[in-house]
Length: 142
Image (cartoon, rainbow, N blue to C red; front, top):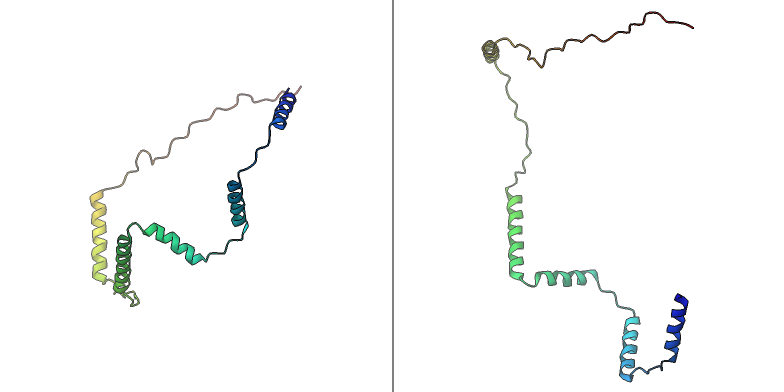
């Protein structure tokens, strides 16, 4: 059925007269194909980048320039306030024996104030429940 429809369609197309393309269309079409078939010159990357950036920054160039100036100011301020001297660890003197004795006294007093530590209910071991044993003591061999 599909083949019959296709044949009828093709027969109708064959019966239609072929129309000529207007001359002015022909000239335009040929000119367009000739310019499209010519190799394009390579555009340098920086030129392309410049044109892309200018389309982005063009609506408000003063605002973008001000933002760039603020960032440059922040970077200069950051690098100028950075301390370039090497950091050395300061030697500290060990605590005196009197200080150590006082710290030990404080620890003992704290332990007395806290009282003895009873293990919490969750910390105590759970009693073992007896497991069921088999009642079969003899093996019957048949």
